[in-house]
Length: 136
View (cartoon, rainbow, N blue to C red):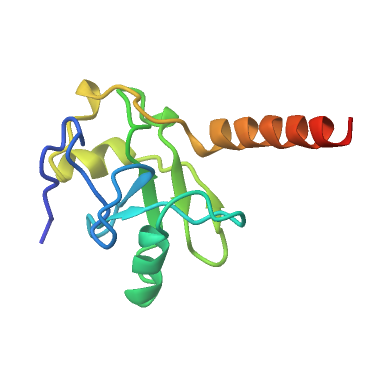
């Protein structure tokens, strides 16, 4: 059974199905679960809902896409695989088709969130600045 995503065109009212968080959300491409992003080492980041869901479902459904990074150009979407042999960013060639089956009209979407790569660059720049400021 294909689970349709409510308010799929905007994701404005989407939230982590475990924590209720509304930022840093990831859609599981296999079962439609919406979960929070990973917690970072420093306590920042998400609620870990998407990764917890992957583990709680027997590690069967590893592919997720970050909501807010999906646009008319599916190559710009932030996709990730939790599978142990990948455990990192991936390209999903049929992403648009997978999303369309869930009722998500990819062509109508605009970017509303930073990708993990953009967030990493931002974090590294802030971290380096803080280190220089403290020592100088």
